Image 1 (cartoon, rainbow, N blue to C red):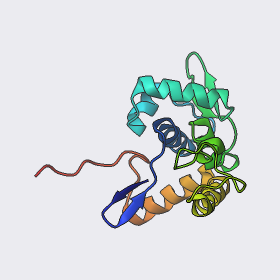
Image 2: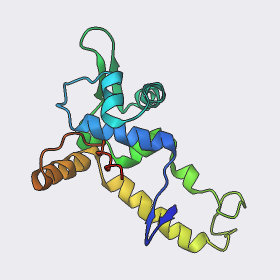
Image 3: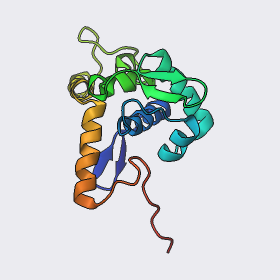
Length: 166
């Protein structure tokens, strides 16, 4: 986590963040609409070469289908409501084993051999796990839809306009 002013942000591994961006965007598309890597790269601001690596992981993990040829591209392998954010994070290098690492470098933390942070970190891990298994790509889509109704048309789900230069 990184502290910025009075708030904290969770720092995800780059591959996990890019996987979330790609699949969140794909969840906004009609279920039978394939998206080409170049278009997905543009929509999510993920470099196309890195995106290719991420998409291979997502195909291998069974979250995405890859179609070759005319009209090809990438599709969600199952409905957005059946893909949890935990599924996406695990495919993008942030699985339960990464959360088991000890902040003090003592190997794996566990109740039999706890580090000084074990109790509080275990609570955080449980909260992250509950969040990741509860929320799906459909929830992301629904939230984006609500935001676009409240704040105007949703141009792109993951790309924010740059602030003006001073």
